[in-house]
Image (cartoon, rainbow, N blue to C red; front, top):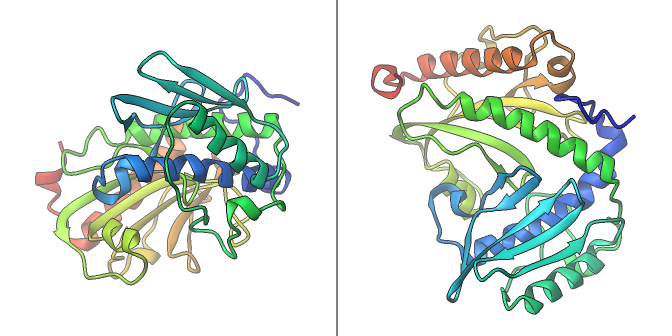
Length: 297
């Protein structure tokens, strides 16, 4: 069952959701270190994570006279700390309560001389429990973790390539540890109406955006999927005809959805994703009146 050579392995939500939930909490700890130490770059870009050849990593983080990075290695299943003075420390990834992982994580940073004060309350999840008190999440299946990383890496290839024709402001294709999704965002350059919500969300949507990404799902949408949305959403977008077959507008989420299963079983998975990105962007940009001549090659 390993499917080690598959670019687009199966990733059924019900089978990997327990590993996903635990891993989400672990990765939030690393993300919060990035928030504590990195510059407050617009739209939380400074604390977003990056895909790596072995897993998912923070960007380079400053600490006194050193720089370092935290990487979740989904090949050897380790959390790896690498610093600019040559120091490398590791902590194994395996079945373990979030509370125990939190203790080990903070001890690892302290032993590396990379102490950072983080807020231990998870974000962007319903009914959060502080890391140090969370014993409910304790699953880690290395096969599912590796498979999810390979799906994210394949998705990154297409999302990153989709930026090439856009010369306006655009985000990297990066991983947001709060929502556990891979995303790329294009900006029109125009301010957006003020938005309700926490400060980081208001800042994230301070200007008009069209976003695309991949998300492993949750109770609302219990399947992995690619998504697309515009904020603010222009009139008529939700009924716009989009490609490929199988993509649809999810009214509850206010987003277009392309199920991952439709992608991985397609004759051309990359082509299906790109059709989804291009059709949703074209309709959203046209309906919102973006200056496409100035923004595109």
